Length: 167
Length: 222
Image 1 (tube, one colour):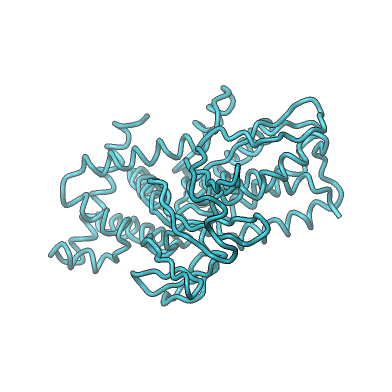
Image 2 (cartoon, chains in turn green, purple; image 1 turned 180 degrees about the vertical axis):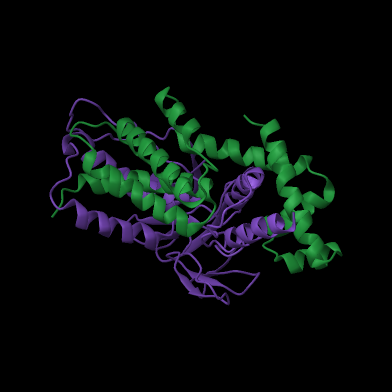
C-alpha cells in the first residue's frame, strides 16, 4: 500500500486545483479531466522534503501546462491561461487560487453592471437563473432567434468590458 | 455572422448544462466571448465545487498509480496535512478556504492549531445546545449552512444551498433532511441527495470545515 503522505497532499490541494480549473473551462467534465491530469502527472514527481508551498507551486505549474495542452488540442488557441496564477505563486503571494477567484467574481459582477440593460438581462437569465434561450426570449418578449443574437452580442461586449476592467 | 452566433450559442448551451462544450473551431474574434462565458459560468452559485464522488474516484486512481513509489517526505507533512486534509477538500467546495502553514526542516511535531490564512472561524452554536443527532441552520452572512451533531464531539457542517440552482434549503428537523423549496429536491443530513426531480444527477452538498473550541461549535468561511 502506498504511504499515506500523497493522500494528504491530494486532499489538501484537490479542491483548490479543481476550483481553479473549473474557473478556466466553465464545465464539470473538462474540469474533472484536467484536475485528474494534474494530479496523475504531478504526484510521482514530488520529492522528499517538499514543503506545502512547494507542492502547491508544482501542482500549479503542472496545471498551467495541462490547461495549455487542453486548449491547444481543442481550439488551437489558449482561451484562458493560468499564467497570472503561476506568476503570483512564484512571487510568493499567499493563497493564490482563491484570491484570483474572488477577483474574478468581482470582475464578473462589475462587467454585468456596466452592460446595457438587454445585454445584462439575457446573461443574467441564462447564467444566473438557468433559463434556456427559449425561456429567456419569452421573458424578454423577443424572438428566439433575436435572443441568440442578443446573447452573442452581450458576450462580445462583456469580453470588451472585461478587458477594460482587467485587474 | 449567424454561423458565429450559433457556434458561440452551442458553446454556451453546453457550459450551462455543465457539459463538455463542442470542440468545433471558433472564429478567432469570438474567443474572448467564450472566455467571458466561462467566467459567467464559473460564477454560478452551484458551479466550481468538486463532486465528492469525483474526489474519491481520483484518489482511488492515484492510489493505483502510486503503488509504493510516491516519495513525499512523511516526516514533514504527514500528520499536519492529514489533520487539515479532510477539511480542505470540502472547504473550497463551499466557498471557504483552509490553508495551512507547513513546517519546514523535517520536524515530527504536528501543529496544535491549524493555520488558517484565509477565511475566519464563526461561532455557530454552543456544543451543549445541539443534542446528538440534531441539526440546526446557520447563516454567517456569507455562507448558509447546516450543522449536525453526530455524537462523540463530531460536528458536521455543510452548505444549505441546493446544488441544483442555488435555492436556500429548509431544514426539516423531524424528517432529518433538508428540503429545497424550489424544485422539490431533498438532501440527507450527511449532504447526500435523497431525491430530486431533475433529469441530471444532483451533486451532494459541499461540507464546511467545523470545529469545537471551548465548547463552541465554529465553522470556517471566507
